[in-house]
Length: 102
Image (cartoon, rainbow, N blue to C red; front, side, top):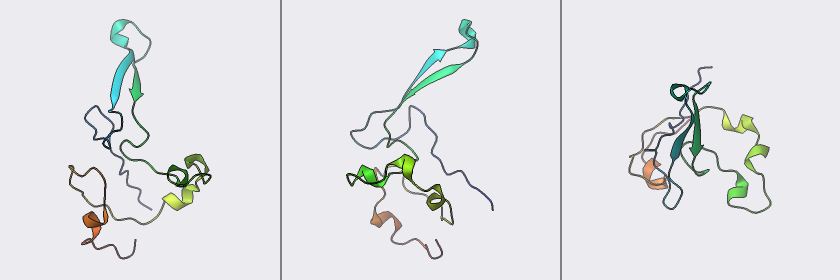
């Protein structure tokens, strides 16, 4: 099976959902400053970039993300491009896509 990484990269330019915190990246340690390693500190909301929403995000007393069966997240898919200006993917974005078999 061929595996494709469809993750969105995290950077200070990564789009975030309206009202969510913007991505912040700080240098915690730097070799150029005499530290033993380069270490960054990342700060962003849990709905930034590629992520999975657990049922608990919308329904109280249901499974949290660490309780999800990962097998449900692996399988056939169709990768499509959505306009970068979209704040959220809606039915309108996918209504004309060929999605049979996924």
